[in-house]
Image (cartoon, protein in one colour):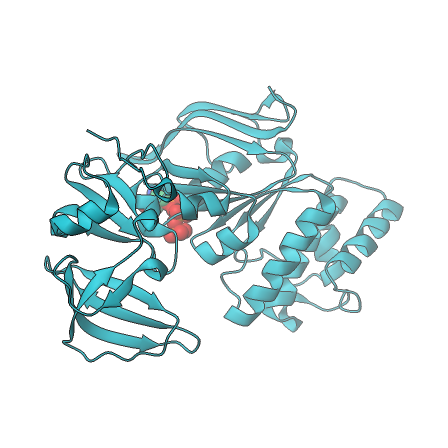
Length: 363
Ligand SMILES: Nc1ncnc2c1ncn2[C@@H]1O[C@H](COP(=O)(O)OP(=O)(O)OP(=O)(O)O)[C@@H](O)[C@H]1O
């Protein structure tokens, strides 16, 4: 096994009764990197993390950590720390006692405990609060105590389950930044569960997008955004996500412009920021304006396609359309993504649009 792999999961399968939650999944978590497990509610993110931690048993498959088979090892034998959404602090213990609690249980001597405590207090900016009880702290401070506890454990691997979801939006942003900075400074391996894509895309080196217990796509955030491998990834990543249009709605002239004559009936994906509204033109699909949303520096325009599906267009201009107004939809050919109508898988395009000879090969 490569020395750079902190966790290797092979054929891991988990069901609760008849409900398959993790479906024969293979996944490598690289050392020293921040990996986000992202996906909609119920897709199996927390279960996958709990299987890594040993808080759930696998039905099938193997989990290897640091070169050792830990498939049936107890959580305490897996050399990792966990940070939970609920913080899991003892209310009757002080901040300092909470932070070193695990070290006391492991009989680490007082001198070493104090040294690690001071380091963790400094790294998490909790100096001066060590004698307070959790009930006397804000949500953000409590989450930093949970982080400090994870740091003093001395384990390189930290599993985090939605650690910021109890914080308000402003605090989430600053604690997010603190967690990422700490992870990089301490070169920790972090596996971070979230359903919030701004967290996953903004923090992680590597994003694992899950759908119904399987990996829909994994890679750097930019890759998931720019090259979605299927309609699930296209329709999940981005806010609003990629708009999906039935190719049969496009007039022949628009196809000719896209220089993709070999394409069969497929789904065309276009990012909302790449869609433009133009005066009605016979060569381009017509849409009806439904409503507009003013969002300060930008606006969202909701339009209806002839098949009654709604598209969202991201515009840098102030809203200036009337509800019910008829317009045509335009985008640069190079901003098109093509997906198989049945499987939803990305269709390969052999040349780039910029080369002006692009022909999609997907018969
Ligand atoms: N102990 C359990 N017993 C039965 N079903 C469970 C158990 N734990 C999880 N599940 C089910 O497994 C599925 C996946 O749950 P999991 O918590 O892993 O999803 P998730 O992606 O983390 O969702 P969320 O973002 O809502 O927390 C859900 O349908 C859930 O109800």
